[in-house]
Length: 126
Image 1 (tube, helix red, strand yellow):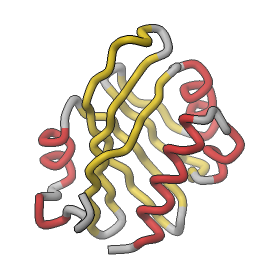
Image 2 (image 1 turned 90 degrees about the vertical axis):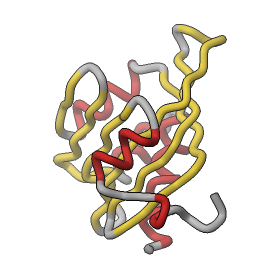
Image 3 (image 1 turned 135 degrees about the vertical axis):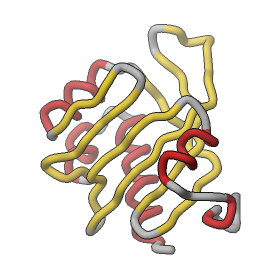
Image 4 (image 1 turned 120 degrees about the vertical axis):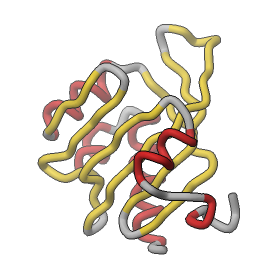
């Protein structure tokens, strides 16, 4: 387990949630892949556009990590529907303190299955 990978993913969440796009981009690789239920996109320009327009807040919960892959269970809220929350999960790949990909999944079980992570990879303080 690398505390660096975890710190990177937590800082990425902080930047997204505070709309600090400059920091979000610094924490991401030039060719980052961003995927979710509406498809996938690639690159910093696409990330910037998505982060600026999604109106999404992701509060991290349980975390799992193994060899550069971090899965985070999240409480999601959308600006367009302020009273609605959902529990989802995202899988991140972190290389040299930069997020190289993030894919949103409908739930934790799906994210863990997609990454081959399991309860054995859970952080102790979950």
